[in-house]
Image 1 (cartoon, rainbow, N blue to C red):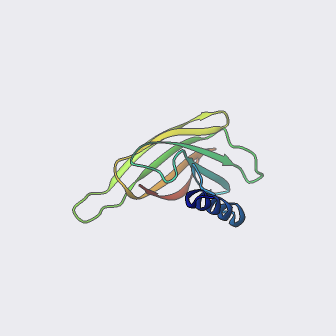
Image 2 (image 1 turned 90 degrees about the vertical axis):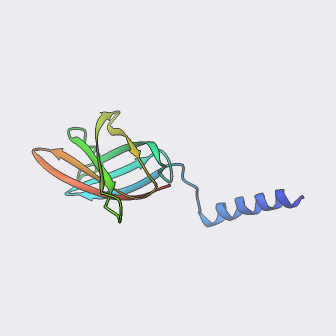
Image 3 (image 1 turned 135 degrees about the vertical axis):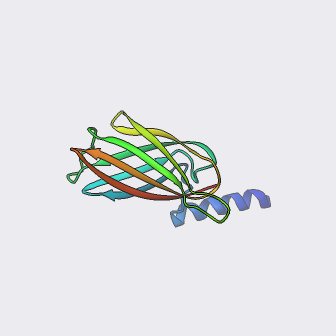
Length: 132
């Protein structure tokens, strides 16, 4: 066995037996009131430019929530020499989940606040991502 093949086999075996997986999507869960909110971004890590986000929401009994308005407010806090950046994206319900593109203008730490309007109440799920 040549050294390159040995190394590849070794790494694959380590991943298999340690449970390490390389995820193709970024995924995180947060609470918003009595709702469980799962944010998925199609790239892991999220990248500068366009990323596609999906938001799956479940109520306290674990049932999907499909009767809400969902807005993502995302940005970066102010840094020396740079003002705060704040953006908004309204998610659209499709196949039982909410979808919206997110465009990150630079690398670094970003916040994503998922605001959910349901039954005349607004609750917020908060996420943090490191954009590459």
